[in-house]
Structure formats: structure tokens, C-alpha cells
Image 1 (cartoon, rainbow, N blue to C red):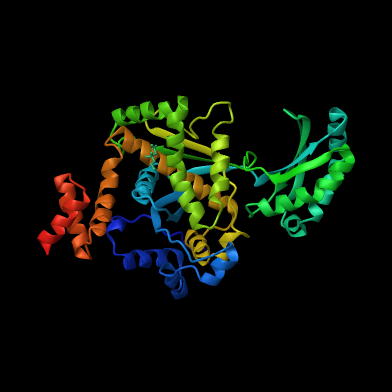
Image 2 (image 1 turned 90 degrees about the horizontal axis):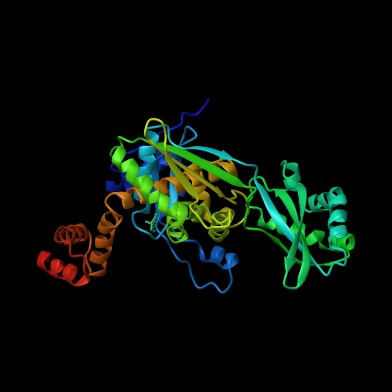
Length: 421
Ligand code: MEV
């Protein structure tokens, strides 16, 4: 029987008590009682102790759910691990607006990663480069011998590229090994292959191999998302125009582009962390890709379509995996993948790029209209209330009073608490 795709739309989700939110996610993603227990548990110390060195304990982030996501016609609840207030709400609101015109649509390349093997001290660079290319079949064969499982699943080393680079220490060759990593992030598979190839490449080139490592500029593993934001839903033609004026600063100015792209990564990183993926790899790849034409610029583009609606597009490399790595060890990362209901790394990347676009739209929309502080205030006020010692019901009361007075300060929160008590 084909399972009907449940809707991820829900209004007033943020007002639900935590138990009711969990109930909604449980029904959407068919979670069991063991899964539910995980929400309030910490990573076991034994697991943590095997993940990194010198462990003392664990460090928690809030885990939220972004609702309303429709990606390629399928509904998703998107888990987000982040310490930043407003981010989850903003993504959910943007996804709700995008739904009006059909949600997000994505395109992606094959999951190809690049491994770099640096060869130095070569007498005849041009001749060595030619010879490496002539030995392509042998090189790919040796690389694929290192990971028979990957090859069995249709992946493995597929191609090589040879680049000659000038450096202050003289000319060198960098051989790129192009590996289809299927559902893995790929670092382990690629690094193992690169290391195994070193003696062969030294023999072919007559040089000395130095670095053998994956490149985080994964520009052969590109993912694109597109969404149309209905002009009436966002406040009419003047809002679309204001949005485009704001966006254009990011297109031409690296100072703004860095902040604009940070907004994109607010979304993407939260999902990458929640699924146990390497967010530093994603960050490095994204920002390097943003400079691909010689000047750092916006990763997203916006324009008006013939109806006057706002169209947003986001393109970046996303080296994410659903097998191997911390995402397989960390129980909550496994739970987050279950909540998403994703079957492949590509599907995870499709949700991630859509989330990045939603987050970016939400930030630029807020900046072009009311500014971002308004959205931040409510949670900020609650945090101040808690810091001042408010408990239970008091927290909302103190926060609301401070917002009303436009005075969100620790001393005022303390005063209000004693007035209430
Ligand atoms: C804050 O975390 C992110 C923003 O600065 C992004 C942006 O300016 O586009 C709001």
C-alpha cells in the first residue's frame, strides 16, 4: 500500500506545549515510544567518549522543528539544532509562504567529491601530467580496490583531472580524483583512496607526493533550490521591490554578502548538525563556492517573474551523508533522519538547500520591512526573564510586560518579578 504523504502544515505550532509538538511529530513521522524518550535524553557518556578525545560530558543545543516544508511535492518536518532564537520560526514562516506557489523545487548533480593528491619535485611537469592521464585506468582501478562496497552500490572513483600549479616553491601537479560517494559524505572513502594512490603516482610522475586529502570545495556536488514567493502574501509590489533592493547589496558587496550567506547557513547548519553531519565542511564549501568568480558574493539570487512574484534561487555544494560518520552513531541524529523520512543523501541535500533558501528569504524579508529585532525580542525577553529568576507562568508575564514597556533589561525583569510575587 502506498503511504499517503502527511501534511507538514500546522498553525500556531509555536504555541503548542512541548508534549503536543512531540505528538504531532510522532504522528507525522511514525515515531515509537523509544524515539520519543530520546527527545529528552542526553548523549550517553560512553558514546561521547568514543566519538572524541578527553571527554568530560556532553553539550546540548535546543532541537526544534521547522514546519510547512514542501520540497519537490513532498512534505517534510525539518529538525533544526541551533542556539539562535527566531531561526526556526522564520524558516517555518517562509516555507508557509513558499507553499502558496508550490513550495521548493530542487535540482542536483551526482554525489561527486574531489580528492587532491599534490605532487612536487617533478623534473618534467608537462610530461608527468601527460603520463598521469595516460595511466587513468590503472589509477581508477587501484582507487576502487580500496572500497568495494562503494563500487557495489554504484559509486567509486570515476575520473581524474590533472592541474599544474605555480607556487613560491616552484611548479607542482595536483591530481584530482573524482569519486562518486553515493549516500556518504565521502571524506573517509576519498582520503583512503588518495593515500593508496600516492606510491603509484610517485612512480608515474617521478615526483614526491605531499598532501593527499579531500577538497571541501565540493563543486561537483552542487544542489539548487527554487521557490516563488507570492507578491500578495508578502505585502504587494512595493515589498517585492524593497526585497530586491536589499538583495542587490549582497550581490555586489562582500561585506553584505557574508552576512546574507550567514543567514542561509543559519538554516542549513541547523539541519546539518541535527543529522550529525560535518557543518564545518559545508561552511567551507559554501563560502569557497561564493567566491568562485573571483569576488565573494551572495549564494542566492532573487528576481521578479512575469506576474510580479518574487523568485528565489539558491545554489551551493552540499557534501552531506546519511551513512557512516557521527550521524550513524548519535542516537538523536538517527532520530532526526527518521523524522525527515529521507531515503538518500541527495534527499537530505534537497531539504537542506530548501531550508537555506527559506531562511535567507525570511531574513531579507524581515530586513526589508520591519527589521529583524522585532522577531528576536520575544525570545530574548523570555531569556532575560529566566535569567532574572522567573519561573513557569511568570516567564511569559515578565517578558510580555518588558516588551510592552520596550525595556528588556535584567534589572527591570527583577523588578517585575517582585511586583508579581
Ligand atoms: C542573523 O543570524 C542572520 C542575518 O543577519 C542574516 C541577514 O542579514 O540576511 C539576519
